[in-house]
Length: 370
Image (cartoon, rainbow, N blue to C red):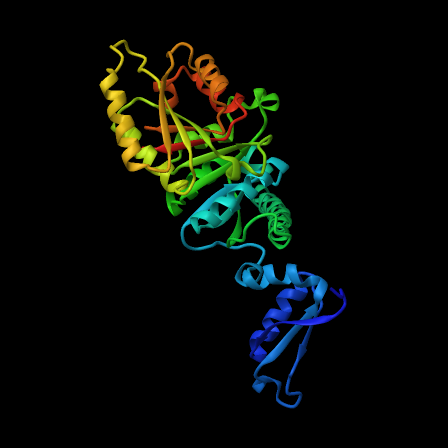
C-alpha cells in the first residue's frame, strides 16, 4: 500500500459528492473530487470522491454509516431508543460504549441525557429581591447550559471517534441537556418517551459506600417503568461478547415469565445459562413444591431454546451471603431482577441487603418492571 496514493472510494452526483466530501473532511480525511464539469458543476454526473489510501479503513466506516457522522453534535433522535444518562465521567462513558453495542444488536438509537442544577435552585428567595434574583438566575442558568452543551459535544465526539476507530459498532445517537434534578429528569424522560432501556454507569464497590443513600441510580431503579441496566465502572468493554451466566431473582410466579420474556428479547441470540434464584416471601408460608420449580423449568426450556436453566433457593435473611455462595459455584456476568412495583426492594428484600446486591456487588444488573 502506498499511503499517499489517491484512490476512489465512491462515485456520486455532484451534490452528494460535496456532502460526502464535507463529512469526510470534518473527520480529518483529505478528499479530492474528480470528473467535475468546471463550467456547470451542478450537472456533473459520476463525480469521483478520492482519498489517500492510508485513510481507506476509516473512510469506509464513515461512508457505511454516513447518517451518523452527518448528525449534528446534539439533538433528539427518533424511534426505538436506549437512554443513557451521563455525568461525562469515565464510568458513564463506559456505560455509553456498552449501550452502543446493545443498540447495534437491537437496531436501536441511543440518546445521551445530562441534567444540570442551577445554584439558585437551592438558595432562599427574598420577596423584595425577586426581580434581581430572577435576572441572576436566568444568567446563571444560561452559563451552566452553555457549559453543559459544550461537555455534551465533547462526550458525543468521543463516541463518534470510537465508531471511527472501529472500537464500537455504529448506531445513531444524539444528546440532550436539561435543567432539573437528575433522577426526576430521567424518570420524566422514561414516562414521556418510553425508551426500550435505560443504561446507567455506577461506581465500583470500593467507591460507592457513601452513595448508597440518595443515589440517582437507586431512585431510577425504584421508579423506572422500563428496563434499567446498571454498569459498574470495573466492567470490561467485552461484557456482551463474554456474557454467559445470569442470576435471575424470582418468586417462581407468573410475573417472572414477563421478566424472562424481556430478558430474552434483549439478548435473543446469546447462549445464556440462567440460574433462577428463588427468594421466598418475607411472610411465612411453605416453600413452593418441587413441581412448581419443574413446571417453570419446562416452560423456560420450551420458550427460550437458546438458554439453559437451573433453579437455586436463598433465604430471606441471608440473600446476599447465599448469592455469594451460589456465585462461588457459578460466577455471574449479570444479575436480573423483576421489579414488581416502585417499592419492590422494600417488599421482597431487607432494604440493606438489596443495596448490597445492587450497589456493592460489582456485577452488571438489569431491573425489569413487570
